[in-house]
Length: 110
Image (cartoon, rainbow, N blue to C red; front, side):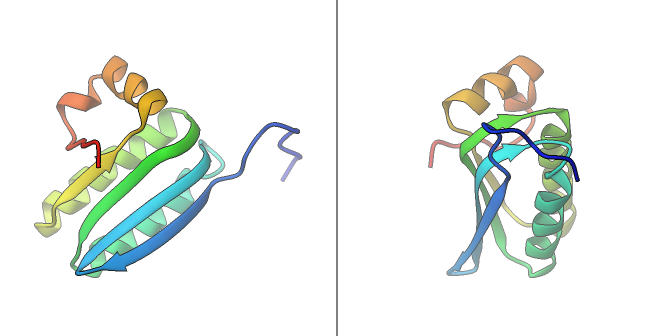
């Protein structure tokens, strides 16, 4: 993989499980290079039969592949009958409002 440059933060995902709830807290950039990593984590959490929270407050950049993963997460949770909550953070919230996803997916401030 080519060098990502000096100011690009690779995505890291911390999965915390508490009281039947998976919280996927991300730091860094959610883009073409990292979206598959999040999608895999979402699929694993949905298979476990738990509520899923996706915390994007520390995501510094998100492109359309990140938006696609959020749509996939919504569809998987709905299919499995699990609750999904997405915590966007201020910068990501603007992207979601611009694309209209704030009206389609379950967003919350905490």
